Image 1: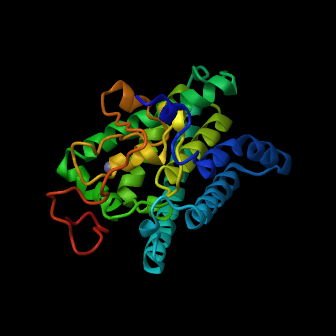
Image 2: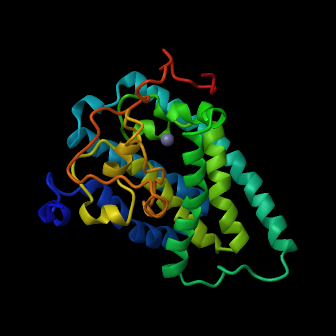
Image 3: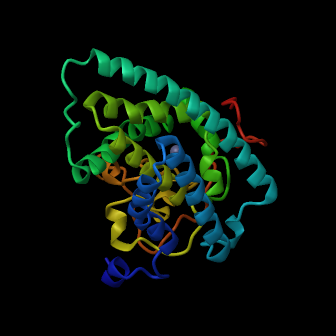
Length: 283
Ligand SMILES: [Zn+2]
């Protein structure tokens, strides 16, 4: 491997992505000072992160032809609205189940008293495990692909179309992510900040930004890694994890080619691409 590419990425660092993650501790401090509730922290953090990435996509795009058109922005905004409602309804359901579970549990959960330094990375890693396998299954099983296909429909990648996810796909991700957190009894704070980290990572790995995360690609998810997942070539369309590459590395689906990117992204080569986006899992 070219060591200069490894330590000092060609094309410079992806500062918009890095700065977004580096701002998280300051955001946690500020939200604590202002006494914000979890819903507000998540909503504001997600929208501010999306706006930050979209601003830099205009200033430093990796590929100018991947910029979202007005019609695509309207489509993605619609998906964001629908999914926000679905997510909120699922959140209520999960909160009810969590209260019931906590009341029925005889002892506090194993993860309840972990320090944040341990609890956060553990919560992120466990929160990624279920969605990793479901994502991998969705690329194999036609009845799951029906719902995941929408996310692979655009022939470009940017922060805006990262939210183009079928509500059913969103639901299975959310339940698979939260289930181990509740079973192991992570604190509400650990779940909140792990959820926000995963959410911001999901936006950043789709962002059309120049630059690289260099050696950090071995530790956290990046646009460089996730673009391979959206390649039209099935043989290289791996990297099923989003926030972390950990499960891809452990289970043999990790693709990392520093300095390179797929020739084309979008609908898998050879598969019949519908003329319209498969909104209802109809293809
Ligand atoms: Zn996929």
